[in-house]
Image (tube, rainbow, N blue to C red; front, side, top):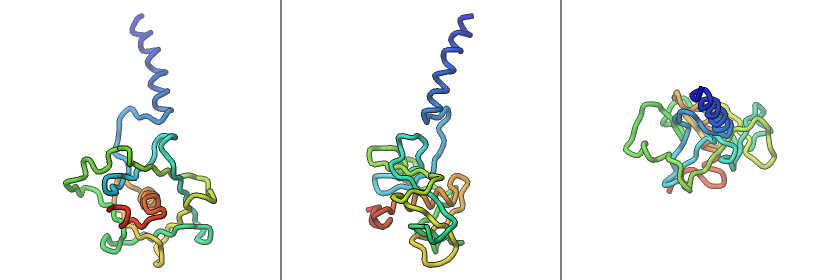
Length: 155
C-alpha cells in the first residue's frame, strides 16, 4: 500500500515538470555556437525572448532564407555525424545563451521568414540532418543574425 501512495504522489510531480517545459530524458536540440555564446531552439516558455515565424508569401516576409543544395554555397551548413573538437561544450547553456522559438502567429515586431530556393536571400543555408529541420536552421540563423551579421557575432 505504501508503494502505491509513493507512486501516486510522484506522478503529479513528474507531470508538472514535463508540462513546465522539463524533459524526462534530455535530448540534443538544434543549437549553433557563437563564440562563447550559443543560440538554441527554446523548449520552455521562459526561455524564448525571440520569436520567429514563417510565411509562404514573400511579400510579408522580413527575412529571406535560401535553401541551397551544396554546403560550400551556404552561409550556414548543418551536416549530421561531423564532430569537431568543440562540439561537446559549444552548445551548453550558459548566461550568454540566447533562445529562439518558432511561432505559428506572425507578429509585426518579430522576424517573419520566407524559405525559398531563389537567389537574393539574406541568408543561405544547407541542411542535411536528422536533428535539425530546415525551419530550425533558418530560425537559429535569423535569431543569431538579428541586428548583426552572423560572421561578426561569432567573434
